Amino acid sequence: MSFSTCEPRSLPSSLVKPLDDNNRIINLIAEITNQPVEIVRQNLEEEELCLGSKQIREFHDQGLLPHVWSEEMSEFYKNTDAFLYNLVVWNRNHIKLQMRDWIGKYLNREDSSCLDILCLGDGLGIDTLYLAQAGHHVTYYDVPGYTETFARRLFRDSGLVVNVVNDIEAISQEFYDVVLCLDVLEHVSEPPSFVAEIAGYLRFGGRAIINAPFHLVNENHLTHLKSNQKYSGRLDLFTKQGLHLVDGQLGWNPIVLRKIDQKAQLPSLWNLHLWGIRLVGLYIAMTTRIWANPFLWTTHNKE
Image (cartoon, rainbow, N blue to C red; front, side, top):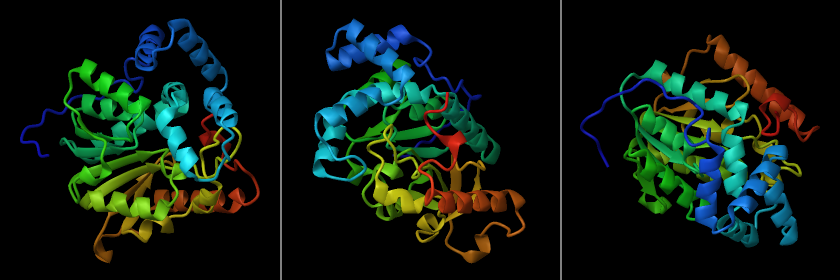
């Protein structure tokens, strides 16, 4: 898909509607899940008190093995409505709001034009909607299920044009200026292969914006894979696919990598901010071997 016109707009609030409206959220989830409004309200209240509570309960009820990829876990992703609650709460958590705001400002600072952006694994579609409201041309991808249904409803109600893809084979190669992939890699069975796919979607010079808390393998994050902890803080996961660090937040939430085909295009070795990000990555990599959560201020549970 290509676009011939573009009308950039000022940045919207990172608290994307309807995240600021509990009643609308509850009614929307009730419609999607065919659950009574009061049950939905109770589930959401429990989720606000303990992020992941419904997911944890259902995971244990089904006797699934935590932190290990399996076909049963794959089916769990497709069939549970628990991620609706989990992702509503996470998307209005102050850490995620700050991350979304940083991404919007970064893209505005780096390029004032409209960008072709792929939001890969965007769940409820909140980041997709935010970037569409900011005037970009956005493609949403996630696997079919409750969260994708929720996202489609948001896009329809917004009146904005969003390209929705639920077949990963249909995503255009070497087309996107930006691929946004937040809180996905820690869930996948083969992160290097997934990163290679991300690189394949980008034009040369395009950027991948990634947040992947590989270190969060605990009772609150049962679908984060233990086998992926070894990627915590490691840039070689990305450089092997031609993606090189160009910016980001010191806490790696997120980092920005550019698809580069010539060494002459690499960022300056004298960039102190990038050295800071690299050093924090080394810290995360080393301490992940000792603690399950070495970097407390990036966790999803912080209130």
